[in-house]
Image (cartoon, rainbow, N blue to C red; front, side, top):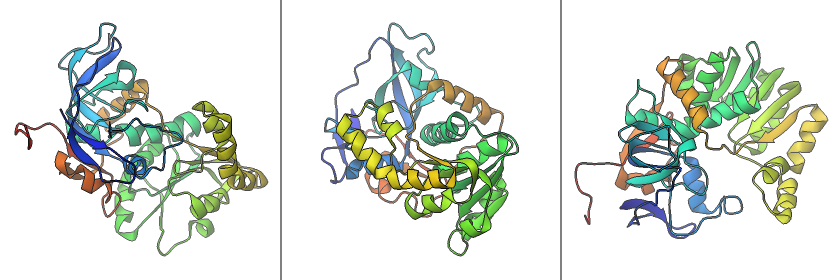
Length: 338
C-alpha cells in the first residue's frame, strides 16, 4: 500500500510501500479518496512536536481524510461498508496520506452530503479546531466580539463562518488581497496586517483566536475586555495542556516555563490565555456536517494536488492559498511501482 511517510525528523518525506492497516474491533477501514494538508504535518516533519507527539518511525503522515468505508470491526455500529465518511484520526493513529487507513469509529462521521470528497477532506482538522476554540473553549455567544487572526487561512476561513452562525461580531486580520473574500465569509471588521495595527484599531473584545503566537499573541491580550480570553493554537503550550495529555512532570515544568510570560501578562490585564491542541471528535464532526449541509459553513479549498506532490506541497503551505490544500489519494491509474 502506498503512503507518504516520515522516516527521520527534518528529512524530506518519502513515498513508500507500507503494510496494510490492522482493523481492530472498534475500527473502520477507509479507502481514502482525499486528504487535507496541514501545517501540523510539516511541523511534525520538522520535529517541532516530538515532546507531545512521539512517533515510531517510519510513520505515514496526514490528519484529514474523506473516503469510503471498506469494512468495519465487529463492535462498530455507526458505519457500514459503502458509507462515505470524513474524519481526523486521533493522535497516535494518524496516516491519511495513504491509500487506506483504519480509524476509530468515534473519530469518524458521515461526510456532508452536499459536498464532494475533496471539499470534505479539507474540513476535519480546521473545522474541529474552530469548533473547539469558539464553542467548546470560548463559549462564544451572540452579541459578543471575536478577533480571528489569519482569516483567509484554513482555520480562519471556517472560524469566521462559525462565529457568524453563533451571532458574534467578527474582526479579522488578512492581506488587502483577501479583504473582500473574508467579508463574504462574514467578517465585520477587516484589518490589513501589512499596513494596519489591530491593537490600535480594536478594543473590548471578548475572545481572540490566535494562530500566529509571539508578539501577535501579546498584542491580542491587550485588545480583550476584562474577563476576555485568548486561545492560541500556535503556542506556547500551557500547564493545563500538559496535564491533559499526561506529560511527565519534567515536561510539565518545561511547558509551564514556556508559557509563564504570556500567562503573567494575561493575569495583569485581567484576561486569560489558553493553548488549544485540537482533538479528534466524531460527534463534533456530525454537527459540523449538518452546518455544511445547511449551507452555514462552506469548505474553502484553494488548491488540489496529486498524491505524489504531497511532500513538496507541505513545505509551501500558506503561500498565497486561501483555505486548504487537498491531495487526491485514490486513483484508477496504478502508481509507479505497482
